[in-house]
Image (cartoon, rainbow, N blue to C red; front, side, top):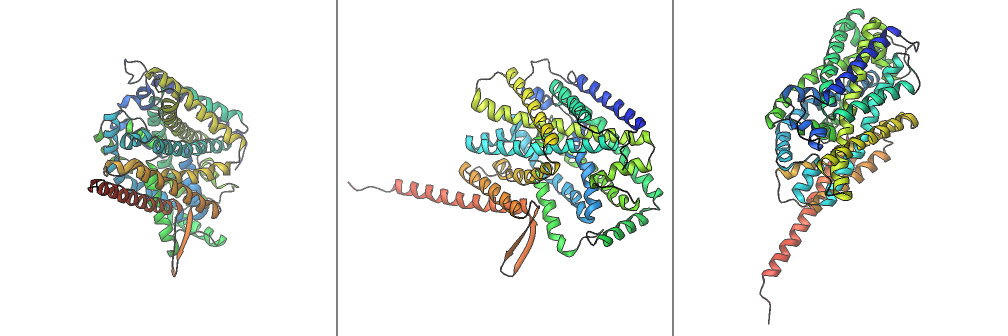
Length: 500
């Protein structure tokens, strides 16, 4: 892919970024309460977002710039296996419909801002709260960095190299998220999603016609996979279980992240959350169309050295410069929206579950919001420095681990909605066991997401995060039974008459 600057595309890209700056500043006054700024106002938009804004916001930070780049890249590299993102985004929405409205009600009634708040409200355990909060922040950091990877890919396609363009994009992110809080990305998500829909629909309508139709696209992709003796447009039987377990584990983890929960908690009602669970599958359709661009890359015979360049290379090769610039702007804005929500979500966790709990328990609501603003900047700077000075592969590996880690918080966050008798000690033991075992498996497998399990003649390959969750639940159950049995014995012995 050529690196020569495309000034028409750059002009379109810059124009839309300027529009983002304007929207970001204006958003600080949009739906603003007359009350002084507090963490609810800055970090959750006052919990007043309706169905459509929540739809754009959750979709905007669930389907990110890196998703737009990485899913077609994975399909280009391995074929059908790369489509695991489709079933996982289908599985997740019944989970959202059933669980998230209950979680929203708990958070609203108790004034909770984060999942760790909810956990402390259930169990009154600072140790469990701290474990969930630490896991959330650590899992989110590489996710933010990957949005900047998407931005780097787009800037490179425009012919903009070096650190300066990325730093400028970062400053746009920092300024609008600091000034407007969650309202900024919520409003900008509307623009971003409309642009992405236009770009993807144009791509699937126009590109196949230029490549001889979908039949030719699939044939070219299958031929390419056969030539390199890896991948294919259909799953092999040995891939069925790993594929299904990866989809299920990813679905269970998706709404445990601070940024996705932030979108849920910012909704104005439980029904808003339910309506979104019914509407969000429209994004799955979009993702399926987007994934097909990976096959189209083979049919277009692209000359690329990095799989992540598939989408930019397709648009540069098959569309006029102005539309390529429009698409790159959509992807670039698609990096800013989730990065802002992720940094806000991480800042909410830091402020509520570290600063207020351990540093200044009597912090005022206004000061709490101020701490969150500073924390969001620190998180963003950390992500920027990671991309500038660490290998990009490091961020990818941390994101793989982050998905496994955040999945282990699910029992602590969700089970309290239904099982009041669980103890914090049981959940904490399960969480630690899941984190430790899952990290060990991934490390021993060479940082791969699938682990092979062999028990006698039985063997199966599973998503490591799901396997770690099973270990989490087993340890949780054993510790719960052991402590309950010990408590029951104490109760019985305490009730027996003693000899004089």
